[in-house]
Amino acid sequence: MDAFQDILGQDKAVELLQQAVKLDRIAPAYLFCGSSGIGRSMAAKSFARLLLSMGLTPEKLPKVARKLATGNHPDLLWVEPTYLSKGELYTAKQATEQGLQYKTPPKIRIEQIRNLTQFLHRPILEAKRKVVVIEDSQTMAEAPANALLKTLEEPGKATLILIAPDADLLLSTLVSRCQRIQFYSLSEANLKTILVNQGYQAILEYSELMAIAQGSPGKAIAAWNQLQTIPNQLLYQLKQSIKTPLQAMQLAQTITDELDPSTQLWLIDYLQYYYWQQNQRSNLMHQWEKTRRYLLSYVQPRLVWECALLSLVD
Image (cartoon, rainbow, N blue to C red; front, top):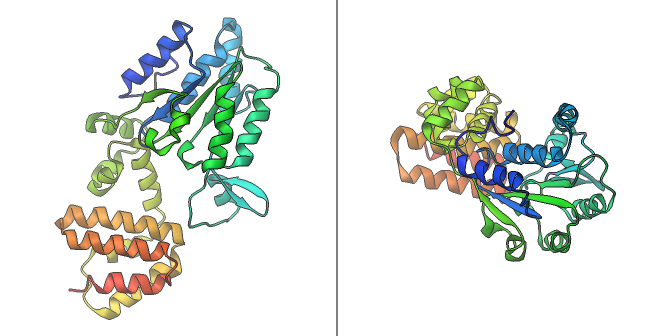
C-alpha cells in the first residue's frame, strides 16, 4: 500500500521522498517547507513509516504501522513546540487540556533539543535507523538552534525532518545541512476535494473561511472548528450593522466576557476576512490590524473592543 496515498496535490514532494527510499539515498536531514495544513506533517509521518519499515519482512510491517498510529514506535521521536509552566513543558494540546492560557505561541526549547540528542545516542531498537520530526522548527531561538546544529553535523544512523513555513525563518547553517522539500498550497479543486472527503463540505458555504484557508485544508478545518466556539448570537450581531454606540459597548462587553484572549485574536482575523468579502473596504482592514496590535500590547481588552466596534457604528 502506498504510504503517501492520502496526500493530495504534493506530487513532486512525494516523488522525491519515494525515490530517496527506493534508491537508498536518504539524506541525514530534510526540511519540509510550506504553509501549515497542506500535508507537510502527513508527509513526514508517511516518510517516517517508509524509513522505519526499510529492511523489515512483510509480516512485521503491520506492527510498525500500528506503533506509528499510536505514537509508540521506539525509534521515532516527534517534537512539537511547547509552553513552559512551573518547570513543566506542555504542547498546545496539553496546555488546553490543563486549562493553561498564553498570549504568546509555543516554541521548541533547549530542553527538547537535549532530549532529542539523548534519544539519538540510545541504541536503535526495532528499525534500521531512527527518525526525528521537529514541527514548527522556526520557533527555535538561537540556543536550541545551535544545539540542534551540533546534532545535524553528526546525526549517526538517523534521519531528521524539520518542518517550517519557509527556510528563511531558520538559521542558514541549519538549512544548509538539510535537503529542502517544498510543499505548495493546494488548488481550489484539491482543497474542496479534501474538505468533502473529510466530511467538512459545510466549509464550502463560507467564502471567508475559504479565503482564510489560502489553499490549506488544515487551516480551513481549524478555522471551522474555531468558528464553532463563537456563540451564534454574538457572531450574528457582529455581522450586522452596528446602529448605536450603546450596542457597540454591549458587544464589546459580551466579547470580553465570553471569549478567552486567543479566541478574541482569532475573531479579529475572521472579521477581517468577513468584512473584506462583504465590501473590500481597506480602512476596515487597518482598523482590525490596529485592534490586533492593541490586544497583543496588553491594553485592556474591553477598551480595545469598544474602540473597534464604535468605529463601525453607522
